[in-house]
Picture 1 (cartoon, rainbow, N blue to C red):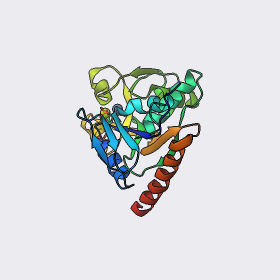
Picture 2: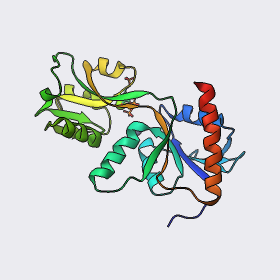
Picture 3: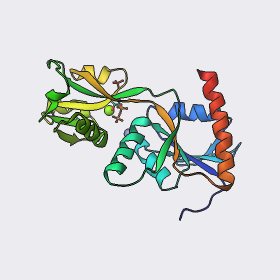
Length: 226
Ligand code: PRP
Ligand code: ZN
Ligand code: MG
C-alpha cells in the first residue's frame, strides 16, 4: 500500500521542452515552492502541493504506483505506456484529465525524401525505427501491415542513414530534425501536446479537496490563455 499523505504531489519533467512551461502553468495557479538542494523535489509553500522533477517517461509509472498524484507529460508518453500496458494485459492505470495547450507535436511516420509515397501498404517488410513501439505496432496492426519495429531510445532520425532502419516513426514539432536527416513525414499516428495526467480512480481525503481546487484554478488559467 502507498503511504497516506495529506499533501498533493505533482510530477513534472526535470529538463526538456515541457519543464519550464509546466512550472509556469502551475505557478499561474498560485503555487510556489522551496527547492531542495538536489533540485529534484520542490516543497509547496502557498499550498501543500509539492513537485517531483523526473524524466518524462517515468511520469505515468509514478502515477500508476501512487507515488505521485498528478503529472504533466506529453500525450505521446501517456498513450505509449497505456498501449504497452494494454498489450501486456494490464488495465489502464492513468488517464488524461486536461489538455494544456503547449508542447504541441505529432507522432509521424517519416520516409527518406527520395521515396515516392504510395500509402501504408508500401511499409510491408520494412524496418521502422521508433521510441514508440507500442503505438507503432498498434497502428501497423490496424493497417494490416507486417513490418520490423526497431526500438531505439533516442536519435531515431539518424537510423536510416546508419542502415539500421528504412524509415522512422518519431515526434515532429518544427520538422527541423526530419529535414536535417533528409526525411519527410507521410502519415500521422497521434496528435500530441502536454496534458495533465492522473490516476483512473478517485483521490480520497485531503488530496481530493486539493486536487479539486487545483483543477478549478487550472481551468481558470487555461481559459485566460486561450
Ligand atoms: C524530439 C523528437 C524529435 C525532435 C522533433 O526530440 O524526438 O527528435 O524533438 O522536433 P523538431 O521537429 O522541432 O525538430 P528532443 O529534442 O525533444 O529529444 P529526445 O528525442 O531526446 O526526447
Ligand atoms: Zn523523454
Ligand atoms: Mg528526438
